[in-house]
Image (cartoon, rainbow, N blue to C red):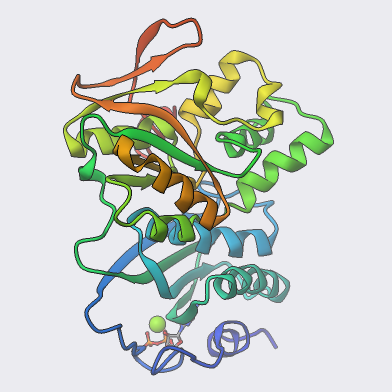
Length: 326
Ligand code: ADP
Ligand code: MG
C-alpha cells in the first residue's frame, strides 16, 4: 500500500507542539507571540533543477530548504520561532521523506524552532517554507538603512570565505575540475549552508543595513545600494576566500567571489565607530566577519584591485527571469 497524504504527514512531519499552542493537524496552527515584539515573516520556494540538483541527498535538501529561510530571518536580525512546509512530491518515496525530514528537523532543533503546519500535494518536486520570527520594534536590519561612511562587512566561516558554493556549482556544470578533497569542501558549502542567525540578532543596534547573500555579492550589495540611495566600493584583496578558492585562477575567483550565489552569509553595513562591536558580535556568534569595503555617496559599485586601480562593477546577481545568469 503506498503511503497516503495524511499518513505521510503524520509519519514524517508531525511532532508534539512545544511552543505552539496548536501545531500540525488542525485547520490552523496557533502561536502566542511574545508581547511587545514584532513578527518577521519570510518565504522561499525551491524547485528541482532550478534551486537544487536532482542528485542532491535528501537530508541535504531538508537542511538547505530550511537554511535558506532562516538566513532571511538572520538578515533582518529576527529570532526564529516556527515554520510551515509546502511540498509538491512526484511520489511518496519513504527513503526520500525519511532523509529529508532528518535534515530538516536537525537544523530546526539546532535553532529551537518547530514545524507548525503546511500543505502536501503530488506534483513536480518543489519545497516551500515560510518562517516566522520576532524582534523588538524598530530594530529590524533593513536593506534601506546603509549610510555614506559606513563600512561594509561580510560574515564567513573562520578560515573560509565567499564563493565556495558557486565553485561547487561550476564543478557540477563541468566547467571546473577539482580534486576529491577540494570538491568535498566546496560541495559542503553548497549543500549545507549555515544560516547566521546568532550573528543577525547580535547585530541589532550595531549594524545599519543587512542582507543575506543568496544571489551573489555584487547583486545583493546592489539591492542595499539601490534601496539606500548610495554607492560603494569593494576591496578585492579583502574579500575572504577559502584555501580552495585561493588556488583558483583570477577570473574564476572573480566569478565566484563577486558573482557568487548560494553563500548565505550576511553582508552588512556599520558605522566605523561600531567596528569593535561588530567583531564582538561575530565572536559571540562563532563566525568570522571581515571588512570588505565602504559605503560612498558616489552612486554605483566599484572594485578596488590589489594594484590600487578602481573599476566600475555591475550590480548584478542571479535573476530567474533574465536571459543569462551572471
Ligand atoms: P487543509 O485541508 O485544511 O488544507 P490539510 O489536509 O492540507 O489541511 O493538512 C492537514 C494538516 O497537516 C494541517 O494542519 C496542515 O497544516 C498539516 N500539513 C500538511 N502538509 C504538511 C507538511 N508538509 N508539513 C507539516 N504539516 C503539514
Ligand atoms: Mg491542504
